Length: 229
Ligand SMILES: Nc1ncnc2c1ncn2[C@@H]1O[C@H](COP(=O)(O)OP(=O)(O)OP(=O)(O)O)[C@@H](O)[C@H]1O
Ligand SMILES: Nc1nc(=O)c2ncn([C@H]3C[C@H](O)[C@@H](CO)O3)c2[nH]1
Image 1 (cartoon, protein in one colour):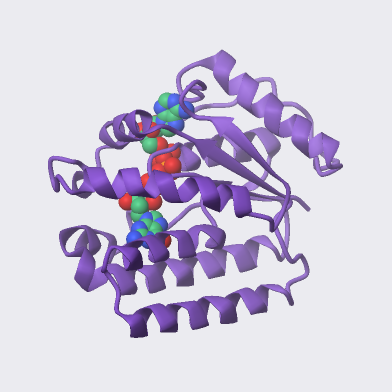
Image 2: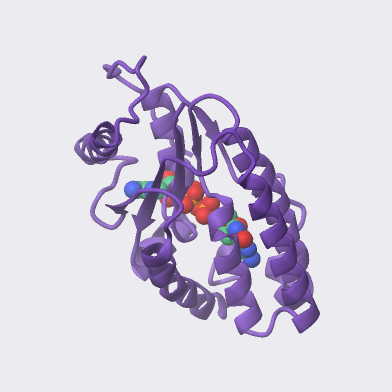
């Protein structure tokens, strides 16, 4: 059983790479709740009011996914519980949560992380982090087109996104729940460039091999269908 988690800023390409990887490795993809998330549009309209509620929503869905993913089978998750505190801490730092909300959040998070220690598998096998610059992030956010994420919807999102990128660097450096590797999301256009996609998949397979974590049943597929969103 092999569990891979993706990480990276908004629009970095996590869902896209999750789908590609799941097809390539023949594993099961788990996606973050976005289009079926009733709190996300409320948060972008009024971040101060909804930051805590959104975080509890995500924490709950991420906890369910990682619990399922660590229980059986080979899985790929497009973002995991390990990035949850990064988002909430950043929102708290810019005044979007009260002290009571911050304290309650961290108690809940610690409680949930404690539960993972009792799972058949305690940690993922590999974290694949997609690193992107601000320019790439914005291009991808525009390409995907969720209205409430656009700078035209709220000009203060520029600061929010730039800040998010600053929080990711130390977060990735500190992450130690599993082995990790970084993909250059600026250079490797794995959605439209076949060669770039092969480079990315080769890098991930090489890392899994080196760790002895490539599923035994795996055969390199000759072709995989890429769904353009
Ligand atoms: N490497 C890439 N090259 C070119 N386009 C990409 C790449 N990665 C993602 N995209 C495009 O950028 C957009 C955002 O990608 P995706 O939804 O996978 O990001 P994400 O990291 O899952 O975002 P979020 O954090 O918001 O869930 C999509 O339109 C996708 O097709
Ligand atoms: N505040 C906040 N906390 C989170 O844990 C979190 N995780 C994701 N998101 C937002 C980013 C994208 O708009 C969209 C898809 O990733 O959801 C979050 N927002």
